Structures are given as C-alpha cells and as structure tokens.
Length: 363
Ligand code: SAH
Image 1 (cartoon, rainbow, N blue to C red):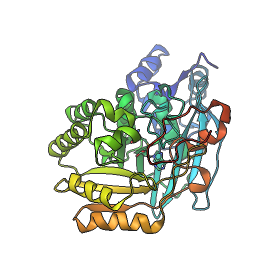
Image 2: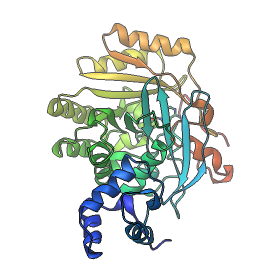
Image 3: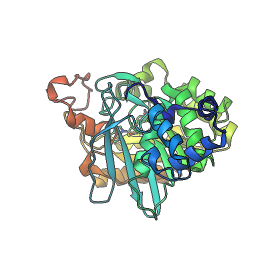
Image 4: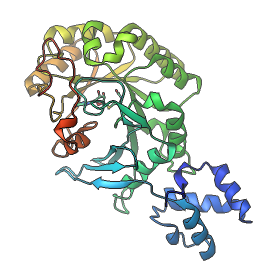
C-alpha cells in the first residue's frame, strides 16, 4: 500500500498527467475531485460516473486515505475529535465543532510544534515534521464525513497542532483547495489561520494576497511575560508582532483577531487587563479571551468565571472589542494537543521551565 500515492497530495495537473498517461481525458480529474470534495466518497469504487476500469486503475495507483483513526471521542455538545496517525509519525488531532448552524473544523499543520508555549499540550515533545497538503486536506474530509447529509461544513480554523505559518507553503495549497469552487468552496472569509505571530511569515501572507482571516496568539501584554509563556517571543518581541499585525490590517483592510488564553494567577489580573487595553487601543482588532483548558500533567489554573468576566469588562470599558469564549468540547480534550497528550505515557513527558507565578509542571 505504501507505494500508492496519496491522491489528496496530487495537484490538478499531476492527476491530469496521470490520466493522459493512461490515455484518458483530463475532465476525469474534475469528476474525481468532485467525488472527493463534494460527494464525500470513501473509495474509488463509489465514483459511479467513472468507468469501472478507471476506478480500478485509480485504486491501484492512489490511496484516498493515508491515516489511521486512533480515537474518535464525541462530547455532549456534539463536538467530535479525531486522533489520527499518519504513519510512521506520531499522532495529530483535528476537531469538528457544531455551534448553531456553524459547522467548523479545526485542523493541524504539523506533527507536534516547535513554538513551546508553556501551557499548550501540542509542543511538549517538540516538532516531528510538517504535514503535507494531502494530510491537511484529509483531516477536513474525514471530519466532513461525520456530518449528516443535511449538514455542510461552513468554517475552517487552523488552530490544531503545530504552527501554521511554519508550514506556510503546504497550508496555502491546502486552503486554496478548501476555498476553491472546484474543491470545498468554503469562503476564505470563513477560514482563519491562527499563529503565534511570526512577522516575516505574516508579511508573506500579505505579499501572496492570501485572503484568509488571521488570528494572533498574544497571551501577554508585555515582553517579560510573553517571553515566558510563548518562548519564541524572546527572539521576536511584541513590537515586531504588532507591527506585522498592523501591516496586515492596512494591506487587507481586515480586522485581526488576538487570542489571549487566561491562566489563573499568571496573566489574568486587573493590571494586566489594563496593560492589554493600552496595547490594543486604536487597533482594528477583536480580542478573543479564552479560559485555559487544563492539560494533563500541566498545573496551570483555570480562572474563575468572575475573574474572566472582570478581565473582559475592563477591556470592554476601554472600548476594546472583546469576545469571551466559552470552553467547548472540554470532556474530550478538545484544546490543541490534549487528546494526544492523554494518549502518551507519562514517562515521555518533557519538563517545562517553571514560571515565576505559576505552579509549573507536575513531576
Ligand atoms: N500555533 C498556533 C495555533 C495553536 S492552537 C498559535 O499559536 O496560534 C490555537 C490556540 O489555542 C492558540 O491561541 C493557543 O495558544 C491556544 N491553546 C493552546 N493550548 C491551550 C489550552 N490548553 N487552553 C486554551 N487555549 C490553548
């Protein structure tokens, strides 16, 4: 099986080339794509408007799926998560969220993560490799198949495992197929890339006129604290991150989202809310305040709902656009890297540097 190519990794031209080598017309590629993206086909044999012989040839040459589903938990709010393994690599995760009429998928871009955010499960073992275009698409298509025939995918968030802007080339090809009418046809305005904030890569998004929404994970309003929570910040600095965010807003006219995970006793004080308000004042931005989702082995505290409310209220009073996000899919470890975290033995955990004000890591 390993010798078969992953069909989701094949660009249109490559599939057309393969068809022409078999003496077949290029329009067959369009039919195959239609079955994959809209027809929710699981196998080539289901592609009933293709000749039998072609279905067999395709099945000999290509695989549609390259992952193994290790776990598939569903939460009471119908959030579903897939723990997937793309052999021979370690597991990655992706999530389907149902909210009113919204059907959002959250996908991973890397196996592991190199950014090292101290409260996040994804980076605890570092990064193994980038996911390919096909592997990113496979997550979306597998989650799409969990929907009923009446349901349609409406949104994509690139907020799973990994730093999306560290795998930008593959991500942009995958997102192009997700947004193109020949692919899933999801509007780019409903696709959000979440980044730790890599200025050069944000500038590349602008240069390449990527039409997607951008979210930047801030988590702290000063460099001293951000260096501790988001270690990659020590090499970049908030000024540079916000500078790139401002250039993105000017170039695209789009509002940017800043994410701020509230960790009890670490970054949730009244003074820190005021400092954040000063930093964001005058910027065309939405602030997403997200209470910490506990990670097995990490002992950061969940802020009380009154602390979350107070934090958000201070920002609101300073005319900052704030969204206080509820925690979704908690029972199934829906936050970045959590499910895989539970699935790996404690002996493999890597210690994180302790934070001055936080409980640090369980031994
Ligand atoms: N590397 C990208 C995508 C990461 S996941 C980024 O940094 O944005 C998307 C968001 O979930 C990030 O803001 C991340 O900091 C946050 N996150 C990670 N672990 C979390 C947890 N345990 N609880 C709440 N949010 C978490």
